[in-house]
Image (cartoon, rainbow, N blue to C red):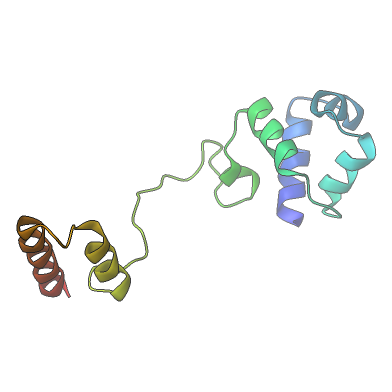
Length: 117
């Protein structure tokens, strides 16, 4: 929470806003802004979104997950391993057991999954 508070303070000071002005912009009390910046309490999600929108920064930046204001670059790679039981269950669920063609396709996918192990 300390890193979050530090980021919020740096952003506010970067545009030379007082805590009172920032509080007015966000619709919170000045004492709340002070507690956020000191790391004594956490802002609500609604308040964090207002900060992100006002300063045009990502939530990753606010939470100090990156130093780039535009945020981290993500590549969608779920943690489910190719040969895992979860993936097998997902494949089983996706196909109609009454259809012979679906069964062939399902078996092909399951075989491919075994090869990737």
